[in-house]
Image 1: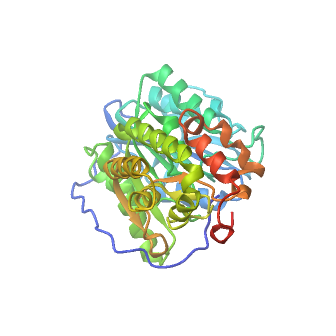
Image 2 (image 1 turned 45 degrees about the vertical axis):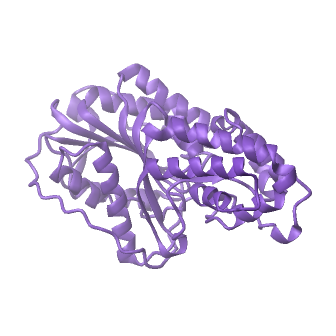
Image 3 (image 1 turned 180 degrees about the vertical axis):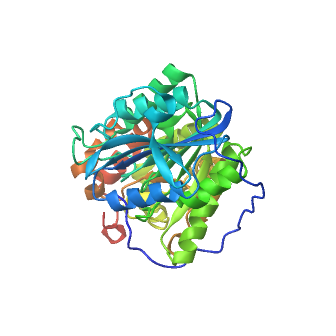
Length: 404
């Protein structure tokens, strides 16, 4: 899911001022400080926005400190692997003087394509730091990167996402400093869990992402102007630039956040404990749990709710067992510690940077959503058992049902 039709004013954001002058161009310099790779899957109805985003990158272009490399696939033609320069893009083969077989039609919904792209970028454009941007529709834990031309798979699933980044790491030995999801609804532990150990920081949105996506011209310029920034700083730059861009356009529904993956183990353990407590006491506190869930911020998919908001509601609920409230308090604290940048529009002001799947009705759990059983974060913690029992429980008050 990716949208281009929501409007409103984003809350005021602090602007970063980066003061270093850009250096002269030197394509594919071996001493680069950053390689910024964009897996640009526009082989679907997002094609016009993909073309626009490439043009934005071309307003800045690579230099001796920063390599911008794009794998772009569109509906109107085969995929091409491009080195982005100031004002134009050059096929990578011309930069490295080696035949990689592009342009060629590829399946962007295949984890093998993603893995191969990462490996080429790391091998051919080595740098001190790496950023990977995944560009296309996103469906949260349901998947990412749909390819309408050759997509043999519906999308890249959670398991396949792990396969791709793990395979690339095994080939290159490189951990991504930043992975950015220029896709809808991806700020979830279910997604972060799949790239754990293979990225230091994540940038993503709890809500839908407008068609324009990330403001690549501004982000690229900030990176070229200050190439010594680290992954944490680049993540914050993306958050601030994104929020500022949509504030100027008057959008109200946007969210954007950055998460420090050093907290992923703690978050996984905290959610596991909370899920176990909720499951144990479900028979007693069903209606209280449902009320606390419904009062949390929800998103385009109403069964995605703000994790910290839900945890805070549980913690403050004096009607439920203390062990639940204690577990919820830990979840809330870990989210606060891990999310180091979060900016929200007016409609999502209760967002804290990380959503989780928590359907409040039977209908919200089943049908296509039965696939949740294939999500490793869900099944390797207690969360799947909790949400499955919760959504099937018949003892709740019907007055509290949320439309799924």
